[in-house]
Length: 54
Ligand SMILES: [Zn+2]
Image (spheres, rainbow, N blue to C red):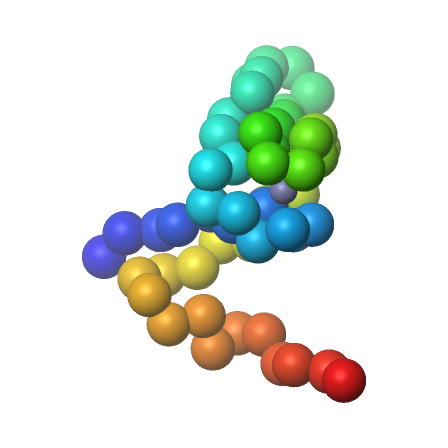
């Protein structure tokens, strides 16, 4: 089982760990420029954790 990390802003899977240290993990998304501690973690390829709202 593997865990994928997605950008919370644009859902990009290119988000990478930018900096980790005393204050915790900070991630950075090259697609939208998001930088922060929040990421969407999904197991495998079925993100059923999210509910679509219109
Ligand atoms: Zn992004």
